Length: 149
Image (cartoon, rainbow, N blue to C red; front, side, top):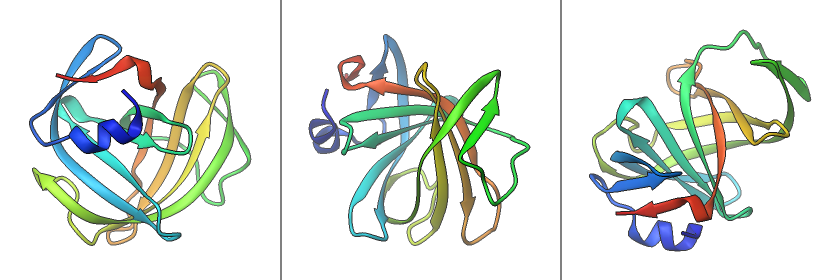
């Protein structure tokens, strides 16, 4: 399923099949980047987070973790025995919320994202309101591995 189709169909309580495993969506959040573009982030059962990347027409599936990294974050990080290369940094505000209120409308986050050659994904985040770290680790998911049931 490509990102635009995903965006048109995703709703709270939907079941997303990702690589053959099913996840129930608890909350759908539309985050607006400072440049005006946006992305959709879904909070799933079991503490997983699923987000789209329109520019690459892919997705990421991650779960919260604790990392030892401190700001300023370097261009390359080693984590879980893998070398992660910096992709981009961004700031975004939760503009629309559907479902459970895991993330609240108007809250914002800043994040620094990294990827490894094997498709592993690391996102180092900070919630602007609380100052709390929100780091996530997982993988890049090709759009062919995603379906809404």
